[in-house]
Length: 142
Image (tube, rainbow, N blue to C red; front, side):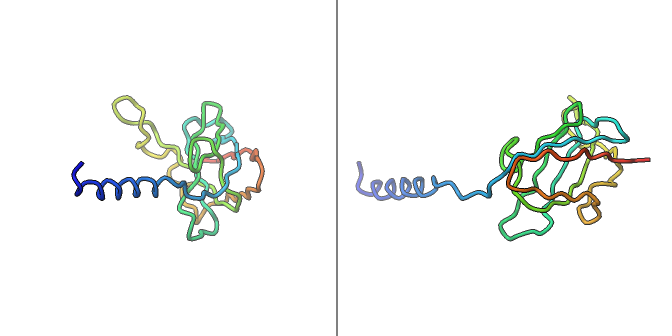
């Protein structure tokens, strides 16, 4: 091997190994809930949990998508992993499916934007260091 390439390869191997350490992640706890709209289950509705007090290290917004029965399980870093303990403002968005195969959610919000702003949310939740099943959110549009 050429003497020039050896130090370059050692440098790249060092960079690769240095980048393999997993960063410390905030612990998460399972959180499940249900959303109704006017008393009926709301399928494909998105639920967002905005931390009440943003810390410098909090660049995440836990979220979930409801199933046909309106049930959801929150995710922060990976699917269904839960959310960190803390106080949250909850918002909701229920976009109509769009796109060629109706698998995108870019249509109009069926809730007309009433529940999307964290600063005006009346839904406040405290998550503790344990698994949580939330009370049902029943959104009224009438």
